[in-house]
Amino acid sequence: IAFKNKLQVCFSARNSGTLSCLRHCETCRYYQDTYYPRLQFIHQFDTPAAVVKDLYFWAGNLEMAKLCEVDEIGLVGMGVEQVVHPRSLECVISGAKKKALGDSDIPTEGIIYIKNRQYEQLKLRLSVYLLKEPQGSFLVLAEPESNGHTRSRF
Image 1 (cartoon, helix red, strand yellow):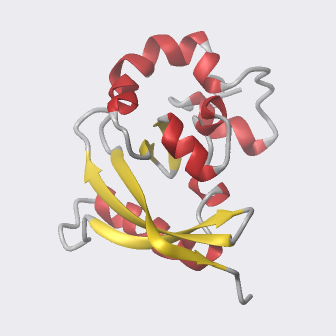
Image 2: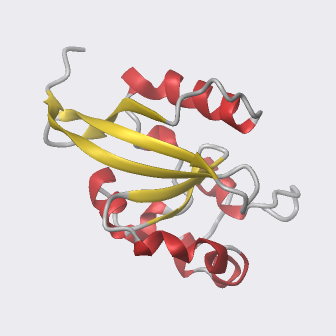
């Protein structure tokens, strides 16, 4: 379906309900041959790190998977809306669009909230850097804010 609809990135359709992929993206041979060689650097970071493009996780290390409360192989292809708390989602989407369009006024560091089973929302300090390859992708480094967990008031 991804190729029939000329989607260059097959996992962008994974959660749409129309793609009948039976495995995780990270175990897919197409992903391993096409994307993984350019993204494997992500596993060198000791802190939570991910490559994000078009609001999808293209790669993530074990620490980022733990922070997002998913299996490491389940992180690839996941939309950021599944991780980012609604409180921060509009800001994340807007910032990603502006950064992708080259807006230099968007800060490279900031605070967002992600969904968390224990506290409902977890406060993170993010550092975001534009990557040259894959074009339009971002390296995202995350660090939980000390005492940054809160119970949602919504």
